[in-house]
Image (cartoon, rainbow, N blue to C red; front, side, top):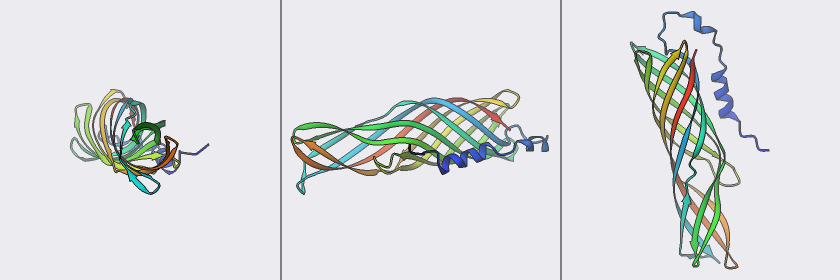
Length: 226
């Protein structure tokens, strides 16, 4: 079984497990200052665009390709630290990780007057690192997220996708150090090229497929401010 919880996961866990004893060291600090961790559940919508180049016996043949997006539910674990840089203003750093449940992209390739369905990349998990400026509004925190996001794929199906993350969210304390939050994120990934061998009408075709992806995820969750 392939281990996917490698360096990104260990880094995230290191942030989550940092000592919480520092909570009592400064009783005058602002409510959102310090370490936090939260778990969000929600929906992820994937929009992909693909192009193809097919060859038969070394000659390029006309073709077209379309890909189906994988929209699904997901869970996102996030951990970070907020610095109180001015009254009611914060600057945060953090990391996130979310499993993708082995989702596989499906490609529809049309060539030689025939439609063929082949499997594209298989996503294993996503992880990212971000900065997060925020504004405290009474017991709530309105914040932005800007960072880098990576989709880790099964190495047998294609290279990883790297891109950027943009997000907007709001946290509201509901009891002591426990808060609820809602968040919307958008990610756009660089295009990646994979190769496939397709058998159509008894002939072997070499296919090169270039895919780019954009994702939107909406999250609701629960967190703890240390």
